[in-house]
Image 1: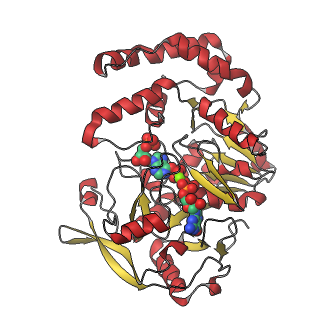
Image 2: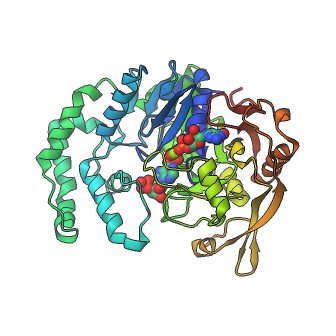
Image 3: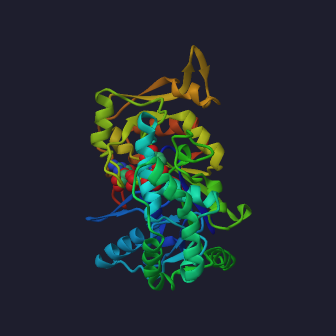
Amino acid sequence: MPAIVLIGAQWGDEGKGKATDLLGSRLDYVVKFNGGNNAGHTVVIGTEKYALHLLPSGILSPNVIPVIANGVVVDIEVLFEELDALIARGVDVSKLKVSANAHIITAYHRTIDKVTERFLGKRQIGTTGRGIGPAYADKINRVGLRMQDLFDENILRQKVEGALDSKNHLLVKIYNRRAIEVEEIVQELLGYAERLRPMVTDTALLLHRALDEGKTVLFEGGQATMLDVDHGTYPFVTSSNATSGGAVTGSGVAPNRIDRVIAVIKAYTTRVGAGPFPTELFDEWGDFLTEKGFEFGTTTGRKRRTGWYDAPIARYSARINGVTDFVLTKLDVLTGIPSIPVCVAYDVDGVRHDEIPVSQSDFHHATPIYEEFPGWTEDITTARTFEDLPKNAQDYVLALEAMSGSRISVIGVGPGRDEIVVRHDLID
Ligand code: GDP
Ligand code: IMO
Ligand code: MG
């Protein structure tokens, strides 16, 4: 089973990092294909806890070759910081490969991200402030900088000049900020070139050859389906394709080579930043999920919004991504809730919608139609087979499976590496 895509089914932070790590020892390559250091993946190995942002989670597995593919936007300073932090903890990072076509996040992208958010006032998206949107905007506007530009000083200078031309007008005249010097950016970027040189390569060719040799390649998505720029809750989204299609354009590996699509989904729902969220809770159960699930952002530390499981979103993700397997995480967080509501459809102005309404305005004021499932009080963190779970937990999982459009193959019962129940193998 050589090419596997792993993505988030909801609004991010489903536990993708843990799921990747779980497969780590059986993988040859782990490829990050979208996003940048807006992602935050927490992986717990024994007593060690790792927080990764830009690097693929597979970097923690000794035999894996981690790849940052063309679809990613790279803040090089952050890349080096993250590598150095792992080196200091004894992780071998020497195998990392970075696409020559990946775009670069610079200081001006970070500045523009922050000032535009401030100017949006109450319409702001609540971005991570890492320069992600402005870097992708430059890519689409054809004024972006790519990794390969670092190795040609003249081209680099020309491109930085071109990019800063209009941005400095905007920064000075509209946003009342100081202009950014071309040379400041050029010198900073040139300073990174030598350390990057051995990592930068044609990663699409590398991955084709790996698949031809029968290697196992995992494409690890950042963000998630509902944050996808095309298929998410636009404009309250990130600026890349976080769905399975993004693995294709973001890596240069063709769609007919993908064998399996795994979607990671929480047993409830969370969201960071602004935008519609029908099952959001504002009562003590919301606080219960935040506290018990430790729902605070890995990247910005912001408190995540919390709500019940939303089956129409699961079905939507199953369709958009072609999901073959779900990994249902954080089932343990629901322990102790007497009766667990699950959103099975929405009510929009008195009309029942079984699927996500086509109009975003309708989705904004959709109210969930809930079905209730009896809870359990037994500790489930030591369960390792489906039969170890209390009957009500089993029934909850089976009910979600029936509503969600694909089988639930793995169940997370705690943050640790071994705290899982496997029903179906994810690689076979
Ligand atoms: P990602 O962005 O999808 O990789 O997810 P994050 O790492 O941002 O957030 C998921 C959090 O849930 C992390 O702190 C994980 O350690 C934790 N986690 C993952 N799976 C489980 C689980 O089954 N149970 C519990 N209690 N925590 C989990
Ligand atoms: P992982 O990979 C959750 C959200 C931000 C904001 C919106 C746009 O850990 O699941 P951006 O900085 O990308 O322009 O912000 O997207 N967001 C995430 N939310 N998990 C993430 O990544 C996210 N990456 C971006 O909060 O609402
Ligand atoms: Mg995260």
